[in-house]
Length: 334
Image (cartoon, rainbow, N blue to C red; front, side, top):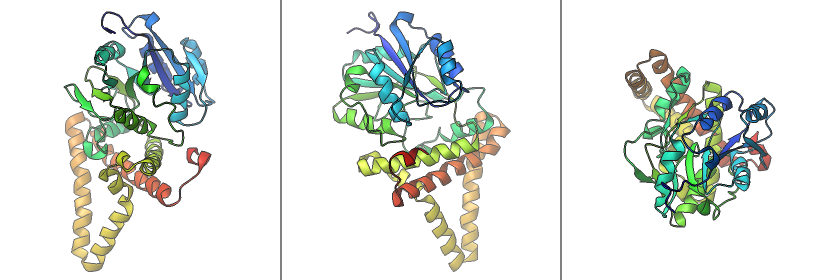
């Protein structure tokens, strides 16, 4: 099929749970896409929201379906069941889409080996200072574990994964791997993408397929988010060692590793302990100054060290909790 001359029907699936704070901006951007109105649909897959999420979706006239479970994985599985499109676009309620998001993406599907197109997840201008600090640290590979999330490349490149906030798929490919196992409370897209790659499909990062993604606006939300992400990574590790890399393991056992360094440094030499602590402070200050240079905001720069700590500490706690005392079933979603 020639997608440039015969535009495919696209289903945009948005998993939600109490998303009233972000959903209006998301749906407004989708209503204003530069794509024929009769060539796309928006499906809100709701995991039993108890706020105004459904009311907002109704106001924008989009379809709302009931997710079959509490996780993002459940919501995407449910949304896919109802989707009619030849192309399935996944994103999140806290995203705002570029007006050419779909138009730019579909042209890459002329290559029949491509099953997924994604692109930059940029930080909105009106994001909170803490959210911008989170966006800044995610622009560094050190903090993304090799993911393209938060990175902004200028050229099309083949990748192994496009994060679920900006991932547009060929329906025929998804039919071969969905529904995804709903044990995965986070990171189900990583598991699904691995299965697609093993079927011979290719993934593209395309710089013109853009969304603006609101990061965690508060430290509490960011803490909880990373705690859950770490639990998801342990579940992936049990599924396949290929789904985790050394950075995940180092961060996962970061707290005991750091504690050992501090204890042994203190035992053998007080100056050595001082050096370890000094290097840690230098590490945080380096990224704080880098954040100031990049964002031109002292408010963001002052929050960068806290964003780093609120990434590393809950990740390690969540990783170790699931690694040593695995929860079962619904307990993971609490």
